[in-house]
Image 1 (cartoon, rainbow, N blue to C red):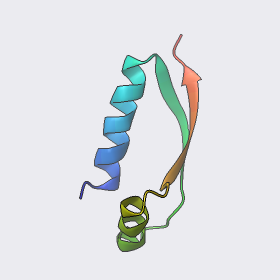
Image 2 (cartoon, rainbow, N blue to C red; image 1 turned 30 degrees about the horizontal axis):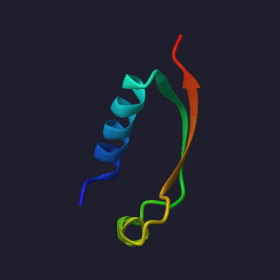
Image 3 (tube, helix red, strand yellow; image 1 turned 120 degrees about the vertical axis):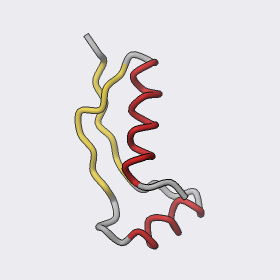
Image 4 (cartoon, helix red, strand yellow; image 1 turned 180 degrees about the vertical axis):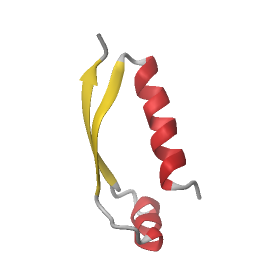
Length: 55
C-alpha cells in the first residue's frame, strides 16, 4: 500500500495535468495508518481536497 504522501503526490500530478492545483487538503484520519488503509480498501475517502484552476 502506498503512503499518504505518495498518494497525495500522485493525485497532485494528475490534477496538474488537468489544469488544477490543490489549494487545501483535509485528512479524514489522524495518523492512524491502519484506519486509513482499511477505509481505502473499502472504497471510502481518506481525504478532502479543495481545488483551484491553475492560472
